[in-house]
Length: 219
Ligand code: AP5
Image 1 (cartoon, rainbow, N blue to C red):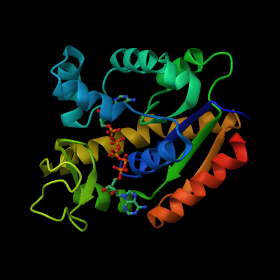
Image 2 (tube, rainbow, N blue to C red):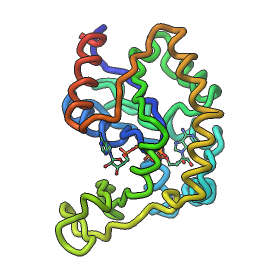
Image 3 (tube, helix red, strand yellow):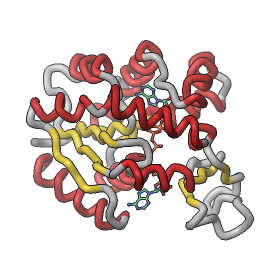
């Protein structure tokens, strides 16, 4: 398999998709497409779809496919995605999204789907202790706080708890993962594109394993 890379990262909320995708994208020089980050950025600029999505996100609900498909399709059409390739983080999450992705990428399709596998009790702990920077989005946790007063070490903006990292929203997100998103693991497995990586190891160990899987399939 040759460049451009076309990779999907699947995994429960809190599995480390964002953390690992950002490292992988930097290592390979590809585009990191996080639908969660795109929606949060849209909300920050006050765009109409950002405002519409905010209510769903705060409650831990999935944002309607119609909104998500529009923003993902537009992003995939951009030149950088075509030239360098991309890793998708948080998309697809429904069968309709997975089928639409196949269509967007015809005729080649996705090359590799990584299932970042982390048990529910581990993600629960990670999500409730996670804190994020309101400026650049850097992730911290109550165990690994910024150096000064909950201000980001990189950009100095406030580091806070995400609204959807409160207990009720976490429960709803994890329920939807089991009911709606996890069937995609089997769906992708049937097309022979799935590789599972154990995500409850040290960050560097997980990153190395992801790189190994990508190298095996992509080069
Ligand atoms: P999104 O922002 O994508 O959130 P998510 O899927 O809930 O994923 P998370 O960001 O919670 O977890 P992650 O796996 O990225 O973990 P992270 O690297 O941060 O989506 C938010 C919302 O947007 C959705 O709920 C929905 O409403 C909407 N949305 C987005 N996409 C959508 C779609 N396609 N369809 C419909 N709606 C959509 O790591 C978590 C924590 O663990 C961090 O503190 C991190 O430092 C820590 N950590 C990571 N790796 C390790 C490790 N190896 N060891 C110890 N700690 C670790």
